[in-house]
Image (cartoon, rainbow, N blue to C red; front, side):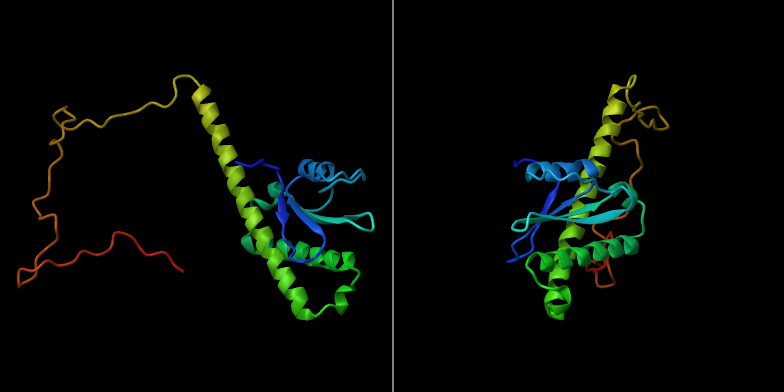
Length: 197
C-alpha cells in the first residue's frame, strides 16, 4: 500500500503544470512543504473553496482546496456548483501558466479540460467523504469498546422458554412456490426492487 499523502493529484493531460486537490489548510500547507514552496499562504480563511496558483515563472502548481466540514451537509447541486466554479478557475490558471489567454483558447478545449477536472474533483470529494465516514465510524467504535461492558446482547425467548430450533411454527406452504392448474411451478417475484440506472 502506498503512502497516504493526504491530498490528491489532478491530471491535466499534456499541460506542464501540477494540480493538487486537498481539503483543509493543514493539508494545503503539506502540499506546499512537499513541493518545496516557501511562500507564506493560507487556505480557507474566507471561502468554502479556493484555487491557489503558485509559480516561479518556470514551474507552477495549482492547489484546489475544499472545506469538507462546510460541504458535508450541503445539497448535491450546491456542491456541484462549487466544484464547477473552482474547476473554471483552475482551467484559467492552466492556460495562464502556458502563456495563453483563456479567451483565446478554443471553447471546446476549455470545455473538455473543465469537464476532465470536474470529474476528478468530484471523485476526490467522494473518496475523501468515504475516508471521513470510515474515520468517524472508527472513532465511535473505539469509544464504544472503551466504555463499561460494551453492548448488551439479548436473546429472544419463545413461549415455552426454549430457544430450540423448532420452537418457531413453520408454514405448511411448499417452499418452492405455488403450482398452477397444470401442476407446474409458478415463479416467485423478485425479493428486491431493481436499482435505478
